[in-house]
Amino acid sequence: MATTSAGLSLRTLGHACLALYQGRENPLLVTDPWLVGSVYWRSWWLENYPSAEEIDWLANTAFVYVTHEHPDHFHMPTIRRLGSGPTYLFPSLAEQGYLVHMARYGYHAETVVPLRWRAIAEGVSILSIPVWNDDSLLLIDTPGALILDINDAKPLGAVVRAIRRMADRIGKPSILLCSYSPASLVNSFLDDTGVVSLKPARHYVDYVGRLCDRLAVDFYMPFASQAVFNRSDSRWANGFRTTYRHLQRHWRSRAQLLPPYATLDLTEFTHCATAPGQYRAAEQSRVAIATRCRANEEDAATVSTQDIMALERKLNAFHWLLWLMFPRGFAFQLGEVRLDYNTWRGRIVDADAPRSRQGDFIVAVPKSTIKEAIENNHVSDLGITMFVRIRLLRRLDPRKVYALFVLLQIDDYGHLRSSAAFLRWLWRGVKFTFALRLPVMPSPTAKR
Image (cartoon, rainbow, N blue to C red; front, side, top):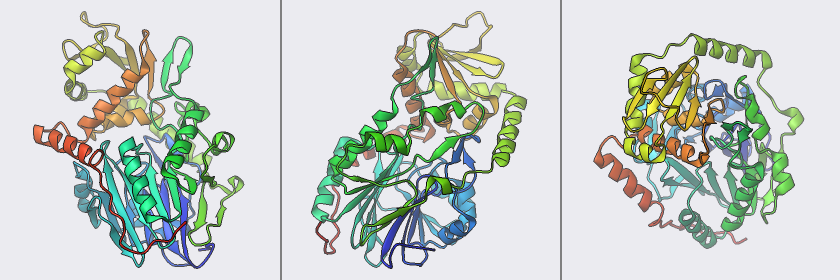
């Protein structure tokens, strides 16, 4: 495995995967490994896949840290490929179903105590910061640099300020890794004129640049955005991706912009990167077979009464709030079946029923996908697929529909299971945001 020096190096792979390693040795740490296959019902595929030899090398890591449960970060096919050798680390979130899931399949998994530095090798420690939206940040302290892995958590300002204060006290060169492309519904709305886009590509570049400057980092490594969309009903979204070319064109930050799939020497701060012409894209024949099989599954699926009742129960967790937001109701288009949700009655009815209304918008979801999302209790994931489209039927602020999926996530993650669960989530959100106190490593720091 080639490296830039015998010292520590930081390398990005896959999508939101970083590897910290020394010389030709096995990695000390790997994060968020989505390295094989696809995610989100065959919609997302990697722009550049690591080789089998590189995955074998990553499998020899001591630790794998998973920031959150989204499958482009917590990808079980990749974890099966990496095997049971590493210790899998997770943030201490309000609900911790991932530990039960990992134990069921025989993996050694544990949570990282939040806001406490944990040594993983000589001179290398990690710090986990849970955030309110069921995500986490990972800070990595090395002898010569401080690494800030913010993935796609979008931390609130109070958290950013706390990290900046800590980084200033540590006083080492710093590297930021965070997403720079939409992974949500922001471009999935349609009206009579076409796509209603909430945010252009420039918005994401400006956000990353401001974050770099607010944190006063020295380097930015493009991260958590290297996916392409290959289903026939999601390819449209490739035209709305924020790419490295956008970063280059609009970059205004004082931080040095590095290329994707880069390796950064953490002693000399030199770097190298994989050239786009050398990217290992998925074989098109394999993609075509996988997406065709998925399309056949979607066509053959049947939405049952139990599925509809489960979706109704999910929506009724926010019954009166949804009535205030969407008094005319809204609908789901599931293949040839349209179902209307009457927000006043809290009922899903067939669109041909006498009490059906036209509603404010229609959410178009393939049948098999919504069945699986309901079964796995991750209905909010529908907003990330890039093939779920929302047709606005009236003049309506799309951000209200976006908020619907945020509400669904609160229920998906079990925060409404009981009053105790809700209060635990609420308290931790306040504690790890507005009462955040980050410790400084006691080890000597290297000045910039």
